[in-house]
Image (tube, rainbow, N blue to C red; front, side, top):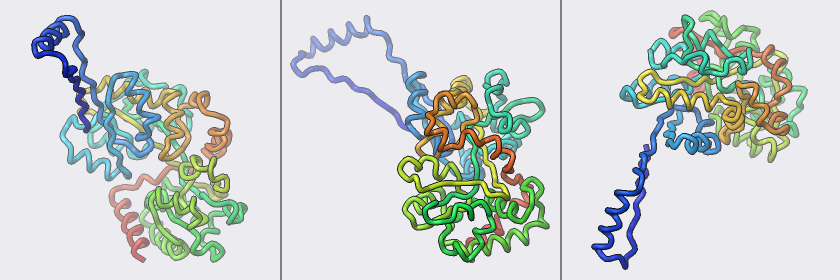
Length: 363
């Protein structure tokens, strides 16, 4: 965390006595300087954009200390290694909110404190964000793991058929997003399986499909490396990409595009909540409310790290027509119908999924 110390030095020509006199007068007449409050948030990279955070800081005279993480396991590990009260706000994958509830690390949020009526109905995810009638988080942003591509180098019609990514036509021209859950979900979808009902029995076929995908790909890489490879022309396709990978680049790279294949795609959603052990719950809730406000949502949707759809429908009032077009604002109803949430495996199945992914990476 960062401490800020402001110092004021007296002009050199003042005598020692005069300096003391001025100091005494200041003590009697000036108002005390209030210490700036601080809030500690464990977040995804899209929350680190100053354009999103600074308006809240200025409006509330607060310094928001942000720690970025990637992957729920990493975030929960950070919390396990922290002291109670170290964190005030948590951003987490929507399908993993229940894991956080199980660990009793999220505080209940009064339902009337959130703009639930303004959240797109299909992404409210009450079953994930709530338990036993109590709300612990709210959806703040959503998007898709699907297919991003350079439309000047591939046949856009091919990208509507996910199976084309396993064909020789695009061998060595593909980057695969390095996150096992959405990629196993996408692979399962290509095999005709529903992400919500994957079982141990599905894993052999999925593993074989992953190994074949790796053999056809040029690289398996993280968000930044995949985005860079597509933008620089090192690859022509990113499997697992989507609007979050290309929407923010369209202005400078109009050749980049994304689509949802006829087989479907995986939908992700991220949620935000207040930490149970926070000693600043009121301020933390105020931050959550800002993030899901129309203004906060528009800034989050177009964050410099990655763009994606805001959960609050009223954010559209604060987005330009160009931004809406890049996010496919008017096509969301169709996309939501044709996509499935990330798999939510049991601990045993999750271990098998990770083993399959590791084996794919090592081959």
